[in-house]
Length: 369
Image (cartoon, rainbow, N blue to C red; front, side, top):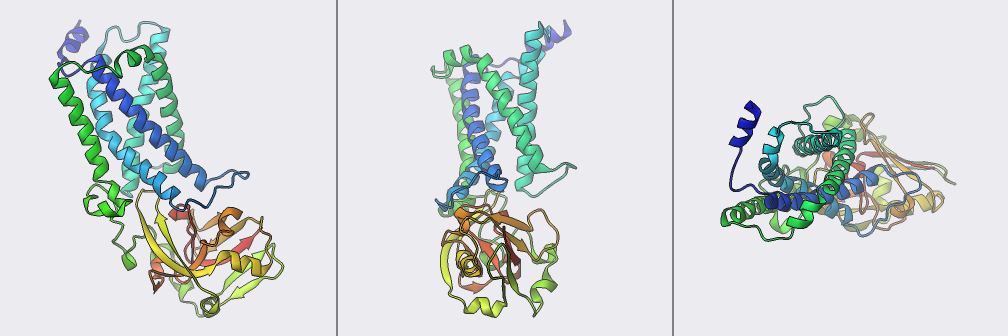
């Protein structure tokens, strides 16, 4: 009786089945965008052996990862409004009416808990705040499947209500104002974030965790030379860039020799997995030219290794579509200036349509397999 009385207090004329259906439809769209773009980012960073991602269009990763983060932030007001709309159902009595009802509530629990986990940890990740003992990448990736699977099951289970209400006009001016306010809050959250990817709106990006114009040489960095422990290595007068492995002729080039090779200039973005990106002008030696000079096969897989001795991304694989692309450089300058130590001096990789964490800095070895 106490639960029944408590449930009766959770009433508001703003709540209705139609309002919940509208919010659920919007959430479904935002979750789908975040899930699809998140999968793209994961498989770009961790591709199966048979998968060769294209190097063009050059801004594809920039757009998809920007959408991933922006849609995640825009989801926050939608999710909070949806939970407020439906939470009286938590106090229904009896709580479990049958085995089927118990399974239905279990999947709703997985959906709600998983969605909150994804949003909270995702926001903390883009703020570079890691207050948990587990690996963010693995947890975020696998929880995404749980959430989206639970979402599909929930949609199937509620399909009759969705079909009846999703496209129907909401009755009541108060309810329409409520939905308009939620939509405006979601749109405003997106508008105040998109500038970290879309330069013309960068001054509006007050919710963005990183200003894409602040950093050494006007470009942000996530890992400095000090943090990577490479200062001694990059200052070593005996530095050489080595091309080795399955090649006809190994190369060992000093920095001065690299500077004397034919230089090429490209405009490519640094696109971070946290959503920010900035386009820069890079100059350096085409990776393709060095590898062909060494006699590498055009179908070879290449690993670019950093002078950094530890770190999850101290090396990255460059597959044929990318290293054969003339836009892929071992860059020596950024925006007409010699690379700052934090941007990868003496040499860094820059290639189209790749995450920033895979644009290896402080390159020491190019290994061909």
